[in-house]
Each structure stands twice: as C-alpha cells, then as structure tokens.
Length: 463
Image (cartoon, rainbow, N blue to C red; front, side, top):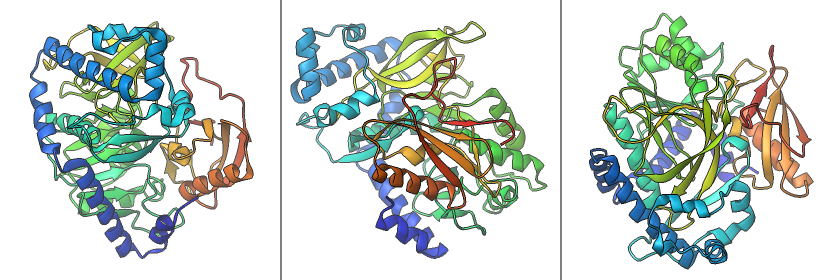
C-alpha cells in the first residue's frame, strides 16, 4: 500500500512538491556522493588506464576476498562451499567459480536472511541502504547494499559520464519510473524540480501526443544541457522535438539506462535531438556494469564486478547469445555470487578503437519493452515499478489490447490472497491512474520470447 509519505506528497501543492523533491534529492546526494565518493571516482578514473592484465589481477584479489568473507559470515555460502569442498582462499583463477551453481532471484528471496552477512570485514563496515528491484522478470527483490558499494557503483557510472564530458552538477532533465507528478493531475506542468540534485524531473506518466510539446518547451526555456532516462520515453520526447518548431541549442548529451536500446530508437533520438545517445547498463544488485565509450562501443567495466557470459542460444540471424551472470566485489552485506541477471547479450571479438580495455557487448537482448498507452493518450514505459516491492510475485507481465486497459499476468510465489490483490491494484493505480481498467490474471508460468526472454510489457497491434 502507498505510505503516508506518498499521500502527503500527492496532496501537497506544486511548490511544496518541488521542495519535497529537493529534500529527497539532498538525501540521495549525501547518500551517493559524500564520504569517500570523490576518492572512489578518482581511483576508478586511474583504473581506466590500466591494461587488461592489471584489471584481471586487481579483480581476482577482490573476488578472493569476497568469497572468503562469504564463507566466514554468510550462512548460505558457508554451507554451499562446505558441501562442494570449495575453498575460497585457494582461488587461483576466476574460472574456478564454475564449481558453483548459478543462482537466481528466486533462490535469493527464498533463502532470505541466510544470504546476508552476519558481520563485515574491519574497514568495510558502513551503514547499509535497503533497495528494491524488479528487473526483467517483474519479480520483486529487497536487498542490502553498503554505502561503500553504492558509492563505488556511482563512481563507475560517473566515470562513464565523464568520458563524454558530463560533469557533476550539470543540470539534467530526467525521465524515470517514479510518479513525480500525481497521475490524477491532468494540467501542466508535468515536471517537478530537484534543486539539490540539479534535476528537472519529467513525468513519464503524462508524456503523450497531447502533452509532448509542453515538455519540449520546458527543455528549451530552461536551456537543459543533458537528458537522461528510459530509452522508450526519451525516444517519444525526441519524436516530439523533431516535430516542434522550437530548437534545443543548449542540449549536448542524452544518456540512456534501464532498458536496452534498439537501433531504431538510437536513430530517432539522434534525429530528434541532434545528439547521439549514450548507454549505460547496470542493475540494483550491482553485479555487472557496461558503459558506452565515445566510439560508440559498450565496454564491460571489468573493475566493477566479475561478469561471466554463459552460452545461451542463437538469434534468428545466427548470432550467439549469452546469459549475463555476475559476482559482486563490493557488497559485503549481501554477496551475490554467480547471480543470473536474466539478461541476454551478443558479444564482439573485436577490440575497440578507443583503446579502453574490457570485453565488448554489441547488443543487450533484455529489458526491451513495449510501452503502455493510457486512456488520455499518455505513454508509460518501464512499468516494472508496479511490482518493485512485491516479493510475493515470482514473475509478472503486463498485456494491453486497448488504450486505458491492462491485464496484469502474475505468477505468485505461494498462495494468492485478497491482500496481495489489493496491494497490486493499488500500485498499478498509483502509476497508471484511476481511470485505467486493471485486470489481474494468475498464471503458472509467463511465456518467453523465442530468445528466452520474459517481456515485461506486451502490447498488441492497434492498442
């Protein structure tokens, strides 16, 4: 259910919502970018000059230390290692991890506190943040992440942004999944301001054919230099910019995250904004990072985590696909070891002309979603936020036949109750609006695509 804080925000006047967004922005800025963040960013920028051999040696030391820690302090891993005769202290090469089975989100949820550390090494102790994710399957997961690990992840992200000339403090227009403007508000402005984070927070839930011109006008009026968000939403905004008589001369950067990006989306964004978009791949579990370089290639951030690419199958054009499996190197509170992200990638054997080390990902065949169309014509992308806190759901998919109507197909983890039904409906209404017709259908399994992916949103032609 929505909490008192959400109700307070939704009922507050617009100027007060700006203040509340800025207070939250200040909290996040302190959480992510204070303390040792500057040192972590400086170290990350030094590592980009290292050879691949240096990166592998550095990563092996951290991997061994994390495995030894998991053996000593994480009940699940201690028992697993003992049963297999696996001795982390003797790890001589990362490939030796293959002795362990790949785990997934369902196992982590089922094992609960047995996956969490009872203690952390001296010098690594710090407050933990509690995060939620749903990812490509729609299944909810709560996890613990130490502040140090969170700041390390943001340091790697900002290293990538700085490759392209973006500097901390640059004003950014952001299109994300949070309901920044209450979905029941039908009048502009369809954005709020986070002064502390220097962000213009654009509502993804109000962007549609009838409102897009107002978004473009706001970008022009405020001379926004940087747009960041979900590719599905940024593409729609770029289409509106292409049709507008207004120009955006201040715009220099467009960055994309949380969904994979198709060639068509890249072309539409480039045409609409006159800026080549850049992509960053990450996940809340912090077990794999890919960053696009100025040459347009997506590099594995080899210093961030130990990433494995396990053979999966082939695309219709004959190219091989690989599962993305990662092991965390910084999460001392809840180590993820050989964790399957649920995403599939296509790889390249050719080095990048930019000279940066790291394996190259050509395409991410995961997180590619259709968008939902609301009754008023507004477009909603990245709808997984509906399920983010719901660990009682194993898998989920949203299907749409007509605008303003959706069916939520869910695979429960156990018995489905009236309370579960009410919580899911409440979350859907909060993001899609009270005028959206919502049906819930229980399933034993959600059908996969031919490539083996579970699509979060399936929208039929004509809807």
